[in-house]
Image (cartoon, rainbow, N blue to C red; front, side):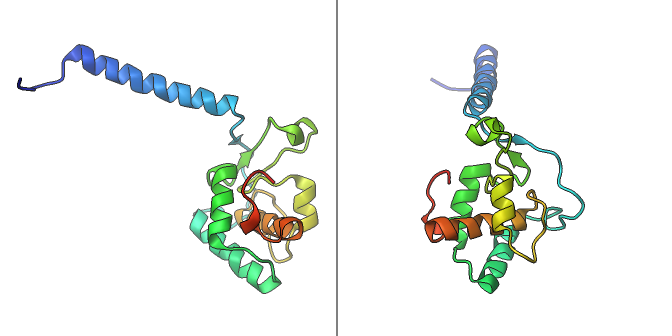
Length: 155
């Protein structure tokens, strides 16, 4: 049997199936409480404009080394991708923290009080600033778990 062209009906079914699967995935993400967009960070967050996850992690690691905060690129990246998929404006509006009015925010999904307590001097006070968020979260993880490298689930 020679295959020459995809029948129109099959092409329509395939397109419909792709759209349906995309809608199912989007619906599952919403049902799972996946992060949603938060207000844009202020102009005081230069690392965010034009930055990348790779650059933000490396900037944070420099600060962490200078301040004696343990952690590795791999540990930060693994947690960051699980928590926000690399979205510096991620906000969790569905968990117990959100129910208390203190949703988790930013790349590593830090709540405001934790960010303030573990903020690292020399970084922005804006929780959505990628470098400030990573560095504060790693400082918290170091105090609570020994290192961000020891965190393998929500913390």
